[in-house]
Image (cartoon, rainbow, N blue to C red; front, side, top):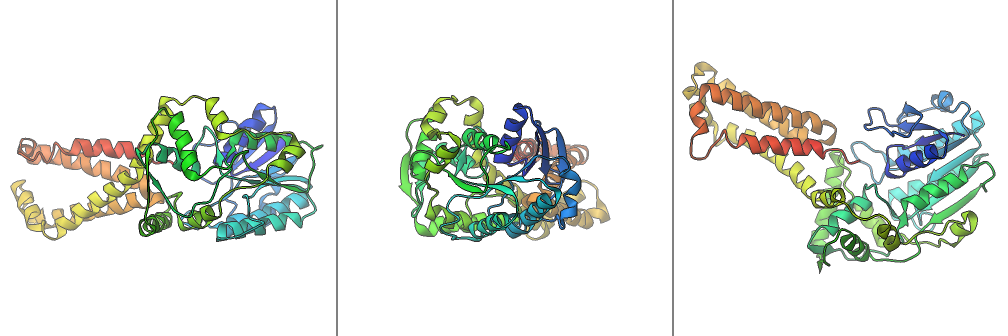
Length: 429
C-alpha cells in the first residue's frame, strides 16, 4: 500500500512510519519544512506545514494513488512554533477535505484519550473539534485516542518520566490523576491493523493500558528499570508547582517544548484513563503493561545518560543566556571602566570605548539568541565564535592574561565545552 503519514518526525509518527515500512508499504512522510532528522523509514519526504497549508489543492499532488492517510500531528499548547487551533482544527480539516476530494477513503486520525468526556483545556477542546470534523466527512475514518504513550523513543511526558526517575528525591505534585499508560508498539500495531482496507471503519477507540498507575508509580517503575534504588518522595507546595508551570509557559513562548505547562496541569488533573476493552475486541490487540514492556527491553547506558541529562538541559539553557547577557550588561555599566583599562593596556587607544561597547552588545546578542529556541543554534555558534575571538585576541594582545591568578583566558575552555554540549543536546527529538 501507499500510505501518507503526517507528523512523521514525532514520537508516534516516526514509529508508525517504521512499522508500516517494515511491513512492505510505501510510506510518504509529511514533515515540517526544515525538520531534521527526517524519518529514515520513509520512501518519500514531503515538507509541508499543516498549520499553514490552506486549501485542499496543497495536498492534491501528495495524495495521488494514496491508499490511506495517518494523521499524527499534534501540539500541546500555543507557542512560538505551534498554534494548536491551526494544527488540530484548520490544518486537519484541510487534509480531511483533500482526502475526500481525492478519493482517499481511509483516514486514521490520532486524538487524545478523554476528549469526548471532558475538555479542561484548549488542547482537548481543539482535539475534539478536529475529531468531529473528520466524523462529518464521507470517509472511512478511524479515530484513535491514546493515553500517555511510552516506548523506547521519548518526547514530552515520556521523556519527563525518565528525567524524574533520575532524581534521588522525587517531587510529587498534588492533584494529578491516574494514568493508564500505553505502549508505543501497541499503538503502531493498531495503525497497522486499521490501514488495511478490510478493517472496520467509522469507529473511535481509546488506547489505554491495562493498569491504573499514579504518576509516581510510573516514575518508580522507570527508576527500577534504570537500575537505581527507590527514590525518596516529597510533595511540592502548590505555590512552587504553580511557578514551574508558569516557567514552562514562558519557555513555550520562547519556542521550547516544555512538558510542564499550564495545559499539562489541566490535563493531568483529569488523568488519562479509559476502557481498553473495545480496542481489544476490535483488533485482538491486548495492551502490554508498563512493567512487562520494560522487562522486554533492558535499560542501556544511553537511557541512563538521557535520564541524568534531562534536567541538566534546561539548566544549561538558562545559565548560558544569563552568562552572556549578564557579562554584556556588566561591561556597559559597573565594569565599563575596567573594560576601557583593559583595552588601553592592549593598545586600542581611541578604539577602546567602541571596542568595549561592541563586545558587550555582541555578548548580549549571543545570549538572547541562545534563549530563543528558533535562533538557539545560531546563538550558540555565535557564542563559540566570540569565545574563540576573545581567546585569540587576548593571546596576541595581552598574553599575560593566561597566567593571572583568576585565569580569565583559561576559563574560556570550559565555557566552550559547555556550548558544544548544548549543541549536542539541543534537539528535542
